Image (cartoon, rainbow, N blue to C red; front, side):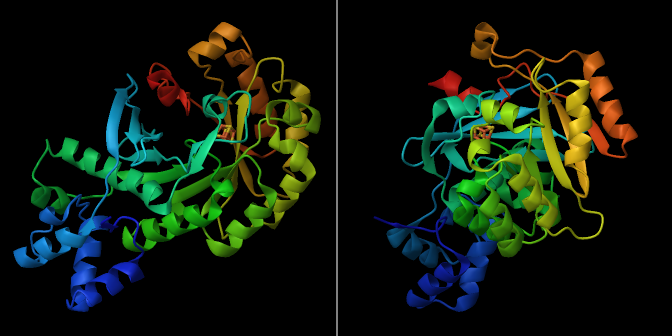
Length: 362
Ligand code: SF4
C-alpha cells in the first residue's frame, strides 16, 4: 500500500523526503502545495522536478475526499456530502456570512455519525460509525476551499487559483456530524494542521460540544485560544436529560463549572447554542433560569429556531417556537446584559441540519 501524504504529519513528510535522498526544502515545498496551494496530486506540484514527482508516485499518494452530492440553498448555504476512503460519508456545510463580502463559515464534521443521540438531531439518529482521522477533518477545509476558489475564479487553472487565494473561508466551526470532544486527539491534530500549515487563525475556529466535561478542560490545555461553544438547549437537568442524554453523565452544574474554568483571552466569550423547542425549553422561566446559569461566565447566546427534518416533521416530535416567543426570550436575556442573537436557520430548503443529507442519500 502506498504512503498517504494526507495522513502524514509535517515531521513524517520531512522524514520520508529525507529518506528518498532529497533535500529537506523539498518537504516544505510539498507541504505548501498541499496546505496552501490546495494540491490534490503530486502532478499538480509543478515546481518539483518531474523525476522527483515520478519517484514520489511510485511509493506515495495523496488521498482526496470524493464529492458524492452537493446541495445549494436559496440563501446561499452549500452542503457537501463527501465519501471517505472506506466508503463512509460525512457532511460539510458552507454558510455565507451575514455581513457578506464573499466570506463564509465552514461547518465541518469530526466523526462518522454520533453516539450522543440528542433527540432533535438527524446525525444522532444515524448512530456512531467511527472517528475521523485528523487528515479527513482537514481535508474538508482543503476541499471546500479549493472548490470555492475554483468556483470564484470560474474554474481557473490551479496556478491562477492560488494567486487569488484570499481566505474566503473566514470561520471554521466544528458543528457538523459528531461530537468533536469525543475525538479530541484527532481534532487537536487537525487544529494544529489547520492553524500552522494553512495559517488559519485559532481565534476564527470554534469547537462546539454537547458537554463532554473532562475534555473541555483538556481542550483548554492542548489548544488554548480556540473558541468554545456549548450546545446547551435546556435550563434544567430534567429537560436536558430528556433531549440530550449526555447530560445524565455530565449534568448542568458540572458543565457550567467547566465553562467557568475555561480560559478566555480579552474580548473572548463562550457561545451557548440554544435550539428553541416549542413548549419544551422556550418559556419565560427558562429564559430567567438561563440568565442565572450564565452568571459569572463571559458568554453570548445564539437562539436557534428549530429546523425539523422531514422525518421529524412527520413524527411531530418537536415544533418550532413562534417568533413572538423567541423575541420575548431574547428580550429577557438582553435585559440581563447578555449578548443574544437569533440565528436564522440557514439552508432550511436543503436538508441543512447536520446528518440530513447523509440520511437522505442512503
Ligand atoms: S447534536 Fe451534535 S452531539 Fe448531539 S447527536 Fe447531533 S452531532 Fe451528536
